[in-house]
Amino acid sequence: MRRSPPPLSHGRLVVLLGALSTFGPLSMDLYLPGLPSMATDLSAPAWAAQLTITTCMLGLASGQLVAGPVSDARGRRAPLLAGLTAYMVASMLCALAPTVWALLVLRLVQGLAGAAGIVIARAIVRDLHTGIEAARFFAMLMLVAGLAPILAPLVGGQLLHVTDWRGVFVVLAAIGAVLLLAAWWALADTLPVERRHSGGLVATLGVFGGLVRDRAFVGYTLAMGLSFGAMAAYISGSPFVLEDIHGVSPQLFSVLFALNAGGLLVASQVSRALVARLGPRRILGIGVSSCAAGGLGALASVVLDLGLAGLLPSFFVLVASIGLILPNAAALALAEHPRTAGSASALLGVAQFGIGAIAAPLAGIAGSHSALPLATVSATLSCAALVCLIGLTRRAGTAARPVSTLGAPESPA
Image (cartoon, rainbow, N blue to C red):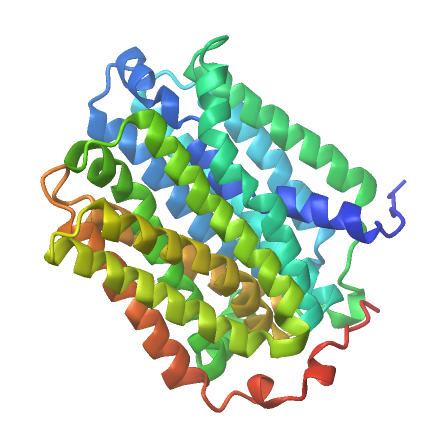
């Protein structure tokens, strides 16, 4: 008999949706410490081992284009459970991969499956909340999901003391199994039948076409994606810049990385506390402006040879600003699209992971010889985010609404 779980409490829903939002950093960061041993075990070149990160990120981006529209047509629960099941199976198969080429294919499948958790979690928030309440809820999700990029590499390193890289993928499969059980047992469908729309390729393309013609939606999506790309450049390039060029030890680098990620978490909770007073549009503007200031500060530090005294504060501002940007950009982008929240959430995810997948290798194009590529990519993307926000959303209806109407939650029924 089909089970219909009772509604979750606010706190438990935050924890569950926040956990579902961690598939990106968990899938990419947990096994990073095991990359060298994986390459040796599979007799693979370093570039092929690193491609396992790229293929997973591509899967996380493209999978949202499928899971989002399907959840608009079929409801949130069934596609989510299917994605979690596929993620669990794909992770186990990754642990059994006989060659790096098989692993590349399986990592793509793993990313495709994990994308369901990310995109549907955002859509569920939009089913239940809009405006200020949605921005607050997204900020709470970041408090849970933001711990993943801090803890995943550390946990992965500790796992290697008791297992090998294959065991790390078994752990990922176990995480998928736990989330599958939790979602099946506790998560009710938040999209009632009367609010679903017919599926099919033509209908899906029509929905996407309508979204990309919405100037405000495109502006918020690009502001979010380009800013995230600037942070992705920092994540991929900062180990080479700080450790190889400026002589920072790996231990100190991990502390600095954790401090920056902590700044992101604090900023997200500042946003949650102030959003009722300032509104999501204004906080988003502050966040994108801060991101651009951090990117330009990093570029100036490299060009003027200011060293760590210029780079470290710039990196902190750039990363912390993402805590202001992500929850408010998501809330504003989804506010006008309650019936197609899954599809709209999918485009948000594609912008994030797609731009991030492009930015990451560009930032490291000079390896450990120069910090200029990292600084240039970060400055360019963050400034482009500010231009898109100002140019495309200036007359957005959501931004002009009184604060009280933005805070009214939409009934899931």
